[in-house]
Amino acid sequence: MFLDIANRKDINIRIDGKFFKPRGVAMDDLPANVKNFFNSKYIDNGELFILLELLS
Image (cartoon, rainbow, N blue to C red; front, side, top):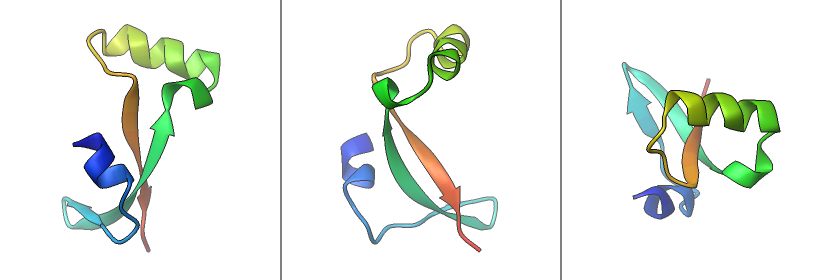
């Protein structure tokens, strides 16, 4: 599902009435402290996740 969303430029995601544009982020691109926090909170996560940008 991640690749289907992250590879599209024309998709918006609506959450609680707000619209977001997905931005693909590789875990390797994140600072070490962010990766460590994320991995400690979500133990069974994948290598990638979707970062959402709020649209105005």
